[in-house]
Amino acid sequence: MAKPPRKVIITCAVTGGIHTPTMSDALPYTPQDIARQAIDAAEAGASILHLHARDPETGKPTPDPDVFMQFLPVIKQSTDAVLNITTGGGLNMTVEERLAAPLKAEPEMCSCNMGSMNFGIFPAADKFKQWKFDWEEPYLRGTDDFIFRNTFKDIEYILTHLGEGCGTRFEFECYDIGHLYNLAHFVDRGLIRPPIMIQTIFGILGGIGPDPENVVFMKRTADRLFGDDYVWSVLAAGRHQMPSLTQAVVMGGHVRVGLEDSLYIGPGRMAESNAQQVEKIRTIIEALDQAVATPAEARALLALKGGDLVRF
Image (cartoon, rainbow, N blue to C red; front, side, top):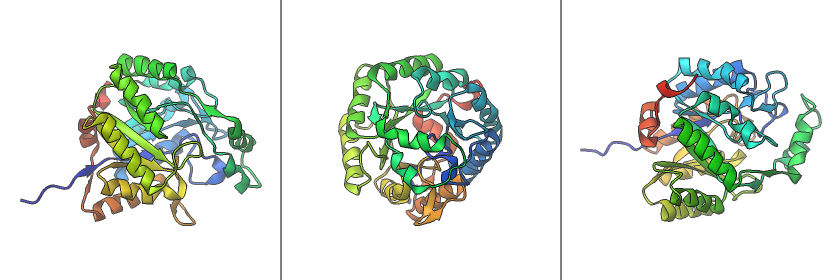
């Protein structure tokens, strides 16, 4: 009997806190647009939806729980996908601000950046002369003197209050090799238990580069540190998105797409929606004789508590 195809989890990061409205008309920032694109992405095959909130008037990232609550219930009512809320938020938010919405919502999953880092998106500001909103240019240019903070104390706070307190599990975002060792530190302390979802991230200025050799290096390091106790996924920024994700699928990994990570669908071609990126990576997965995981399969693989135990 033929071996059944491996199931690949597709995460879709719908809007994020990096790109600004001027960069793409497709980038959703009102609660209605975030909900619509999230639902469409789930229907296209995403089993996990990674969600940030934005000011409905200006598109600026916001940690306001009331804004999250304008789209979380709508998405939940329309899809069985796992809703994964950011704990990274946007630039210059405190850890308390970043956790305000997750602690109110008590979701199945949240992201968790595994260390502080230089997070440089300032080169993007040179590509535009006119801006839709006044906040965008200084927001981008200010990252040449910006450190995204997630200290050991911050991470412990997130794991304790959200993980132990709410039963939330995490997409551990690792932007460099050192982040994998930070993760191993918390595993050794018993604050993180398997199965561990590791999202290795490539191509952000300040983190590890998107070279294929680096994808292999991160995977081998994670294998050495975590053995069989983790689930490996890959995201890559901008034009590196699809090549790196294809490599990850071939290597037995899972994938993340979405307009948070890339605004493109191909060389020089802007994506029209999040669902379009999901459809493309689904086509690649199936062309490689693998299958897309359902939300139920993703929940089982990641040992999630279930959508009936959230507070939205």
